[in-house]
Image 1: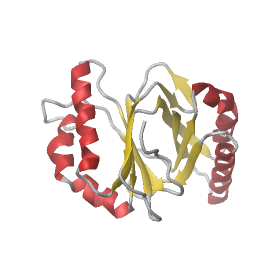
Image 2: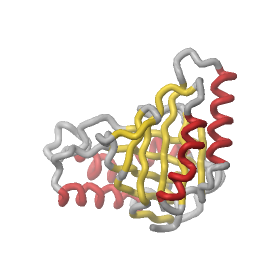
Image 3: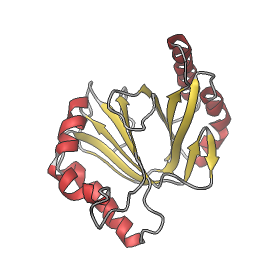
Image 4: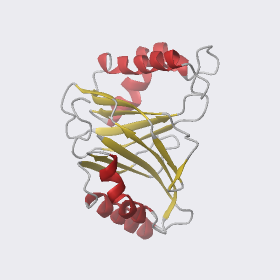
Length: 223
């Protein structure tokens, strides 16, 4: 599957009616895009560089996305939209342990690993991230992917600010904000890759930690 994630920010001085119209326009573009799965959801309080709206689309392949890209981009170029950034990627390692449930939350962490990082170190970092679902029961589904293309202000950039997208579906918001962030697997194993005081740090730039309410499940059982 080929995935497209966009993090959308409201333009300065946008009134609520204008933003509502923008969300409706973007949702309509996603609905008609031909994506196998799609999610358009407002972000919830607590995001970090996470924007005001998440758009996530899944296509059979990159060619299917390119065929729909202009229509989706047109929806994102609404006057009420300010910055748009995001990533495109082929589905990476994924899994599902349970149904997400009616209070589900979709979360995406966009990461930039330092460009001089050796491949074996990146693989150890990825392995540590993928250990988390085995310890955190509220993660119902997950996927870790390497980025193939990025977007900034709605236009592709040759210098990728993101290298990975780490996605999860949580059973509820409280579990994301407490169990996940406070779990020993997070601060005892994974945090060292992000902590500038640790010698193993490889994520030195700011991350995009964004999440919103989930309707239908968007992360598959695998692959």
